[in-house]
Length: 501
Ligand code: UN1
Image (cartoon, rainbow, N blue to C red; front, side, top):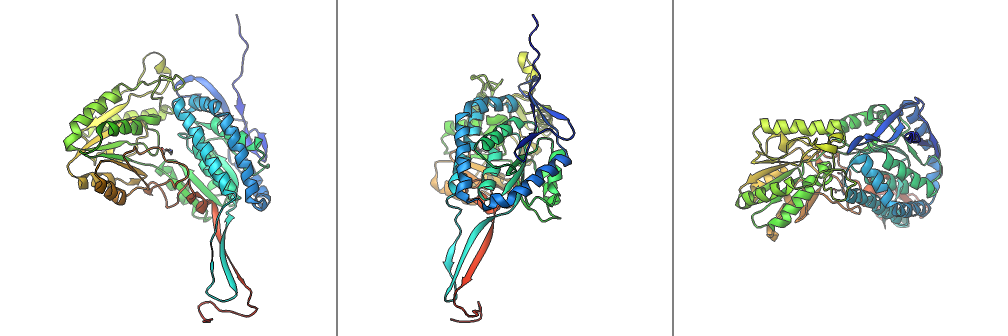
């Protein structure tokens, strides 16, 4: 019997409070990476014309929004957070369908967005500046935070709701209006976030969302003078392009890029705990986190035992559709990412790393319709190998043996990235030395490299970032300008640094 033909849902851009089809009339397919036969939806393929329209809408709304008292702006965020709480499970299911990570993790992703939204809602009644004495009599001095203007936000596919929330919420509470371009692989989660903000009462034009790919829909934001700041999370390679494109118009620019994070396991570590941490840090989210522990350096006294147990655990991870509660690891996001992983397996083998487990695409039965790759472990790696230096962004972990604590730290710091690092040890002196000497933006002791919490600064050094931080109160320093205010009520000319009373 024939069944009804149901066309795939289509999604438009959100401009000036309305869902508008892209001028091109074209769409981009959002497919399930666990089963690419499943079309999740078709999203606007936007180009410069749509982006310009969104920027114009954001500019027109900017003054009114900046004059809206921050506690009132925050009330909308509170209502949005409540909507996210109510819909958490539905959003998580949709996110698993478009991104592939397991349900527990997509629930975590939505939870991170909820946490960030509440955190920034709270900031609406703080946004503290400084009041401080003036060096002159009858004069007051203070600083206040003011909006930057129109924020252009470009977000990745690995945290499809959390990372947009990290950028959108502080931008809004600080009084900026926004043009957001989410990754073309995971637009549905941004659609949900946008709908939640709209339902919470966000005025038209304050948040505008443009779907599409980077070159067509992201790039036009970078040189448009109507955008005052850009926040980008993605690869170091694209981050460099973003940074250069922002320079001619002096846009404030925040870059959150690659990582080559490490777990250092000392002889005195609680070994089972370290193995739990390395499995979660390395294979959680299929290794597709900027914070993923793609290197594990193990001191020689416990190296063999660690390697044996770690390989066994990696081998027994259940890989499959993230909607199945038994699944522990989902697919790679798309074919290109799977190919990148496969090419790094070849690179590792060619440079002499020992392939201890994994190394292949998974193609049996239903898995053939998705972009699955085995959890893969290279052992006895040299820290200078490309697989130990370059970000792979997949389920590949390199084990590196080392002799002394100093060697471990040298290996940890011997990469061009600096996001997250971790040490497992019971020696309190080494724990504190590592916290001081690891050259990363985030350091963990006896916990893996992933799992940053929203109320602390998030970001990295070296080629990971460009000095800004997101998340936590640090985000406010990016999404607001400092304005310094002096009031002289002496009724006479007082000259700072010149007059002495
Ligand atoms: C990212 O991979 O870009 O710390 C973000 C973590 C998460 C965020 C990761 N809370 O792993």
